[in-house]
Length: 317
Image (cartoon, rainbow, N blue to C red; front, side, top):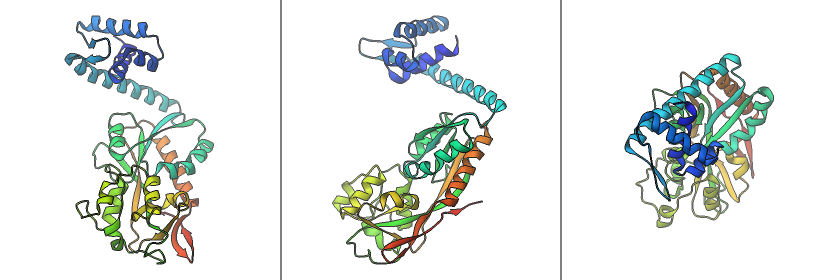
C-alpha cells in the first residue's frame, strides 16, 4: 500500500461518494475506484460497501480508516519538518480563528504579514473554539487564535492582548446617555450569541448572568450565530449586548450606541499551538505581526460627548 491509496480511502470516507471523492482528489473516478480495490486486495478485506446511491465504510474499514488518517497526518508532519529545516518562514501556516475575532483582526494583520514574510502563506479556518482545538489535536491546524483557555495539556498558549468589551445599546435605550455602563445594569436584557461561541460566555460572566436566568420569550427564542445579526437585533430595540472592541469600528455604525463598561470587562486573545510544531519561527512571526498591528490599532474606550475616544488594547508580555 502507499500514501496515495490511503488518501483515496480517506476521501471516500469523507464524501461517501466515489465521484465527489475523485473530484476532490483531482483524479478520474475509475482511477480512484481501482486504487481502492487494490488496497482492499492488499489487505484482504472489504473496506467499503458499495450501493447505487451511497457508499458506507465496513466495520473493519472504519477501524483501518483511523490508522490511515494517522499515517497521513504523520506523513504531513514529516513534510513540515523537512520544510522547516529548509526555511520555517516559507510555506502554508494553517491558522484557525474564532468568528468573533477573524473579521476584525485579520484585516489588520494579513497584509503586513505578507509584506514582512512573503514566503509565509496563511490558510485561514474560521470556526468555534471547540472545533479549532480539535483541529489542533488532529493536526488539521497548526495554530489558532482563541479568546478562552484551551484547557488541554497537549496545547500550548501565548496570551497576546486583552481586548475590552463594550456595551451595545439601542439609540433610545434608557442608558444611552450614560458615559459608562455598569455590567449589572444589562443583566436582565442581555442578548448573546448562540451556544458554542465563547463571546456568549464572556458576556454572561461579565454581567453576572447565567443562562438559567429568566428571560422574555422573545430573547429565549432568538439564536444569533453572528455578531452582525446580534447587533442588528440591538439596533431594532430587542435588547442590549456586549461586543469586542475591535469590532466597534465596523458594528458601531449600525444604529447603536457603544459605551465602555464600568468593570472594564475584557477577553484575552491567545495564540494556541502544539508543543511539537516544527516551525516555531512561523508562530513567532505571526505573534510579532499581531503585536505590531495592535500597537497601532485604536479601539473605543471612553465617550467624549457624542463621539468615543480611543485607546489601545492592553498587551500581555
